[in-house]
Length: 219
Image 1 (cartoon, rainbow, N blue to C red):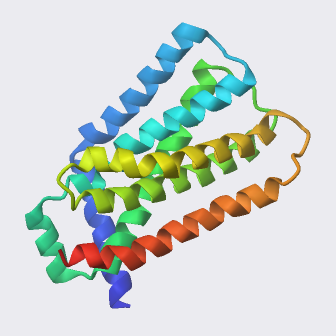
Image 2: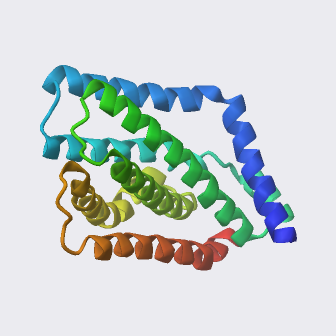
């Protein structure tokens, strides 16, 4: 029970920080809206495949700005304080959950702005919303894990780019392929296998974060 209390307290702390520093949330929202608006001015309403690719590429940049900063913003004094009041597993689970909810919110808002400015070519809007939720969760988990590792290094941004590229590119390609189902009435072969693969990757990232982060926590 104490572990759950620690996790909820850490999540509450992150929520309070976000509500007090609202310029961070609105800054990311402005970034999303302005990026989509520039795409609209340049391309109008693109075809289905381009629409799908642009959506997930923008989600990648949203995740980098919204999620990856979570550990980089924590200074040594805060980390020492958290070390004294909570365990490593509680801390990383709280970060994973908070960033997951934050990314889900940003993903849904991005989809809303996307459909307003770039049109709505989706045949199955609710299916795409479900895939967006799954994809946003996957991206947030990966970048939270990478940020946790990079926060202990001297060159955080460079390390995140080096580690993130081989992990995130296959995931993005898989998300683009899975989300194609929302643009037609024809069900793809192997769709559920791809969805299960994404879920399996998410579980693997969570397990690695819980297992490996305590070793970084002691540093």
